[in-house]
Structures are given as C-alpha cells and as structure tokens.
Length: 240
Length: 73
Image 1 (spheres, one colour):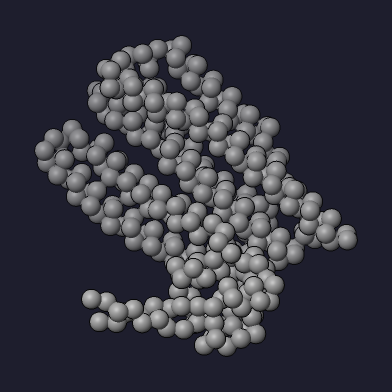
Image 2 (cartoon, helix red, strand yellow; image 1 turned 180 degrees about the horizontal axis):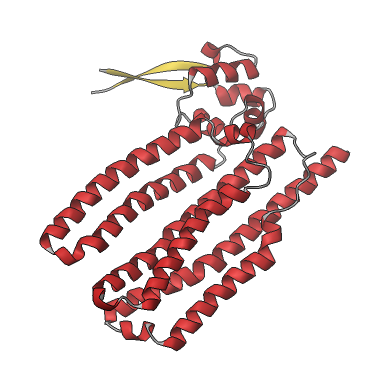
C-alpha cells in the first residue's frame, strides 16, 4: 500500500514536470519565434532600420529576460522535482526515462528554432561587414548561447541522478544507439551536400560565403535533429 | 528473388504473461521504445537482446522470432 502511494506520488511529480516542460516550451519558443518572424518581415520589406531602434531592442530584450526569468523562477522547481531515491522501482525508472526522452525532444526543437534568429542575424551582420551592428551581433551571440544551453541543460540536470553509468546505459540502449547512428549518417550526407551547395554559391557570389556556410552547417544539424525527433516520437507511440 | 525479414510473436508472449511494454522493458533492461519497435518489426534486435527477451519471457528465441520470406518481383 505504501509502495503504491509512493508510486502515485512519483507519477504525479513526473506528470507535473511534463506540464512544466510544456509551459516552458511556450515561454522559450514564443520570443524566439517572434524574433525570427520580425527579422524575416524586416528583411523581406527592407525595414531593417526598425530593428535597430533602441526602443525595439529594449522591448525585445525585456521580453526575452522576462520569459527566461519566469521559466527559471516559476517552473524551475517543477521542472526538477525532488523524487525520492527510494522510488527506484523499474517501472518508475522507465517512466522517468520516457519523460527524459520527451524533454530531450523538446530541447532539440528549441535548439532548432532558436538557431534561426541567430542565422538571420548573421546574414544581416555580414551584409554590413564594414560596421557590424551591435544588436545583430548580440542576437547572434544570444541565440547561439540559448541553443547551446538548450542542449546542455537536460544533459546536466536530467531528471535527477541520471549521470551514473547504470542509468546512462539504460538511456543509451541499442535502439537509441541505432537511431542516433541513422541520424548521424543523415547529418553527414546533408552536411556534404549543403557544403557543396555553399561552395557553388560562393563561386557565384563571394559575399555569400559566410552566410551560406552557416546555413549549410545549420542544415547538417537541423535535418538529422528533426529526423531524430520524429523517429523518436514515432517509436514512443504506444501500440501495445 | 526472396527477401527475408524478421517476424516476431513478442506481443503475443508478452500479453500472455500479463506484461505491459513498460514492464517487459524494465525486466529486459531496455527502454519501452525498444520493445515497441521490435514488436512492430521496425527494429531488428541484436542477438543479445533477442536472447534476453527470450529468457525474460521464458521462451526460446525460435518461438519469439522467425523468418518471413517476401517474394520480390
């Protein structure tokens, strides 16, 4: 009876963590998507000067800061619930592994989306090589840091105690290794094709060298990452 | 030309023992996704995993897995 109660308690915490993760996606993705849309609209309409307005920069910066602060202060605790080590029942461990995979998928999506503003900023910055705009450079740096954090955070915090050898082995069982190998093979092929395309673009117009190389490397990361996310989600679907 | 693929009765044996995919995954020491993809013939398990699953379900590998000959034109 006590074990059942403990299981229910752990499951409730895992579900709360899932809900917190979903809320976190919205709060982290929304400003990144808004910024990407704003950049795309500014480049298409030729109104890039608007993005250099100090007021706009302050508003965007405040929006990002508020979202990140909210996630850290409000959702941080729920995101990493204090689950007792006594809850080491294999069923619970598998549930937590599934929850961990869901979180990794989320972070992968955040990484893919948050890199887009970085690339748009890069393009904008290199169009003004003579006086690289400070704001664009900050966007590049900020989005890159966010992307790196998006991948490092789940690896570092995990759902608590996931860094020991035994649990790492469970997370990396043979199916996961096979899936990762397929994604990496796709990434290799994509990168080769995209770098060749970047080379051709550079031969055509030298000023496209850096942006096209950045996009080629992005394709080499984003396409296999998307493949991995979709394949992982399909494998997670419960058909049994 | 015949192409061989791997069929399995994993779900049949698992349900006969009243186990969920999560339970079997826990007993075999793999993730539920592995069990799910093996059952659906999406993923071909290694010999080690096939033997582990057979041992876990108290069956032989031949009972769990079999070859299917697909005729290709």
